[in-house]
Image (cartoon, rainbow, N blue to C red):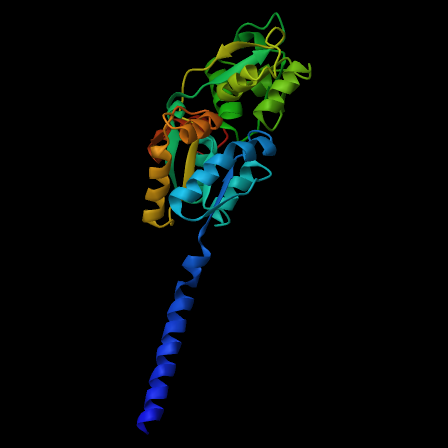
Length: 292
């Protein structure tokens, strides 16, 4: 073979190798999008509004595009993460436990709001004669979504602890699908009482979207662990760290940080771990909402 032919062959081989390397790295380049979602515990427009500045902040910190995709129900948020259609999801404590069980431990909670260490639920009513949990016997009650930690699992758990079985002691149990919908059901007289998360209740009161002369809180639960941002276990460790660091760096001392934290109804974000949700897992099994 002549020298020039050999040289041409070498060039072609190098080009082929180079193209091969480029193709090999193409999947990682194609994954320069972080696909994010959240359990639909509020209206989709509200979830989008809350996430927009956080998404823009994460794009800057991670150096990649961040896309928020709303899901139709709680189960879709779990399936989306497990089936690799999503990379990160804002879960409630119970939804995280469901995702952990469905994926056989292949999901990792990264961070939670400081408020999620001792989260609470409230029971509300318009009825003058409902002043304690026991007064709910024989009455109608609305939970939020069946998969909601603060709108169903923990309120049900505290009712059971008070020796009240919602399915046999109450006249009727309804599921509104979201916390703001529970408030609307109580305010509209569709049910005698409702249970929802304290954060949404306080937000609606603060925005004067609920008439506190008519609708009032008659019971606030003890604290429990709740919401977190969860990723798949197979996410590259360096990306997990970048995401965690970005959340932990958010501070109310900066205008950007304060705007994001206010929308997330958080004072700050703190690290979390799967073990924090053991009590929720036990409560779910106790209430018959998770297989023992």
